[in-house]
Amino acid sequence: MPTQSVHHTPDTSAAVRQHAMRALFDQFDSLYEGAIAVDCQGRISWIDDKYMSMLGLRDPQQVLGRDIEQVIPNSLLREVIRTAQPILLDIMEFGQQSFVVTRLPLRDAGGEVVGAVGFVLYERLAHLKPLVAKFATLQQELDAARRGLAEHRRAKYTLDQFVGEAPATVEIKRQARRAAQQDVSVLLLGETGTGKEILANAIHAMSARAGAPFIGVNMAAVPESLLEAEFFGVAPGAYTGADKKAREGKFKLADGGTLFLDEIGDMPLPVQGKLLRVLQEQEIELLGSNKVLKIDVRVIAATSVDLPALVAQGRFRSDLYYRLNVLPIQLPPLRARLADLASLCDALLQQIFERNGTRRRAVTPAACALLARYPWPGNVRELRNVLERACILSDRARLDVDDFAAMLPAEVNADLAAGERAMAGHDGAGATSPASPAVRPYAEALAAFDRAIVENALAAANGNVPAAARLLGLSRAAMYKRVAALSRRA
Ligand SMILES: Nc1ncnc2c1ncn2[C@@H]1O[C@H](COP(=O)(O)OP(=O)(O)OP(=O)(O)O)[C@@H](O)[C@H]1O
Image 1 (cartoon, protein in one colour):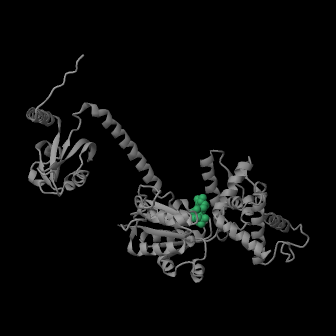
Image 2 (spheres, rainbow, N blue to C red):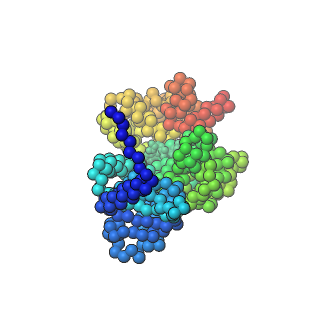
């Protein structure tokens, strides 16, 4: 078949184009729900009646001349002017509604962008409905994920979860309540596993910041090279080859809430300087940009090391130490509040029961007496580990002395046996005999305990230090320090 071609003169082309434009405009006029135009500075220059009624406005004078974002916060008309490019199809949120919109730049006779016009096409285009429905589902999923994340960032613990009634524990709780009422830095001091993180959570949960996030960073767990990015965030494309997207730092995530800095003694000196500046100025600078962000964060720091000693050695900045040490709270080790042992066992066994779903256990008074003879270098965390292991190894509902004996150093059991013999008068030398093998100078006995505990754990872990640290509920750093100290003493 011969192909037929139609030739148009320039005159007929222009006429067809004009006709098509008119038809398109007539069609378009009945299709859109509202239209708005802005000038080249993003100020509203025109709005039609339909858009006015969608926005609940009566008089155009209420909006004419105002910045577009003041009336339609999510408008991208300014972006259209900046790029001189249309956004042909988009979904724009307005309050609870989602509008399907199209945005076009407006040009003058010379082609210069002099403004932009936006149309709302919502629902008139039936084939967009599945897209809108999909968008609504995704939006709901995103909202749910955001709620979940916010929930996750709330404080996990309250003061009720800080178990104990010993006078020292009651005093700590009193200090925590006071700290919650004051919006100042708090420094929690205490050996590993004494409950510093629980207390930090509880202070946040009782403070005016309770509705905002509680964000924790453990200085010992983040490699030094990543700490700054972790804290302050990264600007988009800050590094070549790195994430092109911006990454929010912990300070930004904690904005309005509390930032918990665990093991602050492990913070490298350069980061200490930056932290001090942030605390003083309450603003952060994203890595890879000179953009400064205002933030409002309360810091609770914690340490298990002697910070003044680090200051004296030049490993911790004294100005930062004073800045953090506004309100210090000293958490005593478990061995100094043995009156809490029974209620701690009870609460921890309840937690283990809830988590593992096995039978609910208790500890006999005799077993509690045995546990009280152990100095607990890993404190409550170690107690929890020991109870958890006993629950795995024993079938008894009431855990007894022999359920724990194998887990504790021989010295603890020997002391108990000697004590029992002495009480029963079977050692031939009388209950108060000074020659009893169990009695020796406190420091010497403690050192022997320490050695036995570490050796015991190392043997159980086949010499693997991190595994032994886990068994004892100690941090790896704390365990390495103990092993080094023992080999120095040996
Ligand atoms: N008073 C307490 N009541 C109940 N549980 C406690 C208490 N103190 C500590 N724990 C438990 O012991 C474990 C260690 O507590 P936490 O992490 O708060 O200690 P920490 O002092 O922050 O330790 P680290 O210095 O090693 O980070 C957690 O499982 C916690 O639930």
